[in-house]
Image (cartoon, rainbow, N blue to C red; front, side):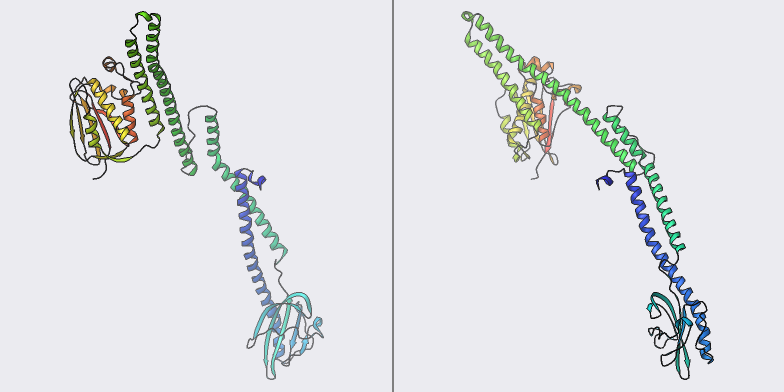
Length: 454
């Protein structure tokens, strides 16, 4: 079995086709042989009946001799109404009645193939029985001739054998050639895939002209390769982004550490002139910045991992009202539609809102406007400040990690550059979006997420 399964597809299909043709020919040949044999037997029976009819006429004319001519038959036997043989050919002289199976009752003549008759043991004969009606009773004339063998004749068997062999051979070469031509595109695709694996050329395979399954395979393979190429490009872009992220993170982490080291070293060089209270406050500020960066990094790592968070129905109106009520350096104006319910993690949504409010507080001149409404099946939260705003070409840049625009750096040197990326990731994990949209003044951050039915 392993040797057979190891052969090529072309050889196996050619073998399957040849075996199927052989079996079909055997079945057809059996039916043809049966029909030929039946035709030959009927013709032989008519010939025997014609020769036995001559003896019937002798009985009718009362001219029947005791010994009759065989007329190239294997034998003739005439039985009187009592059932005694009264006339025969020389080879049946002294033999008893050969059969009483035919003719059937009320049947003038009968033809049958009988075997192992007393005079012909071990052989089969075509037996024709003719009934002659005489005044003294019914006479029966039996005529015997050799039976037709199952193969009819050696010539018929030889013809069928040659025909079967020819058809099987033609099937082998025909199927082999058709399969070879059919699999040519597959070979080309295989060769191209090997070249792609080896790193040569673009990631596409040749598409055959025929509109068949192989063409569909090639098109599907090209689509798969296209997705693979896109995925590889995205992976490379993600790796590049990760490298930039690691570089930016190391830079932002190194800054507070360097500041703390410088402060401590200066204090240790001149301990008598150092205000240790002031040095401690400076080091503590650097530690706070370092802790904020690490906390944001851990939050981003958790969001990137996509782990299942707590999800529960919550009133977004109450959550926004609670957070906006906290004391801030800028005046907060709220317009909140009551009863806006969503499904989410309260801690993550609080983190999202806090990041947006902190960002607006850093850039606002005098006030922050927070609006919550529910148009249709989604909750829409807007945070608008009256600051300088963000240019359209920089609206996506601010969501990149460790990105702080020049205005942001000048206003708040202690920012981590991770607040807005964390806010967007939280929005995505809740099936929503966070974007910056047009406004008459300042920057307008818009959060959209699915709302629950009342």
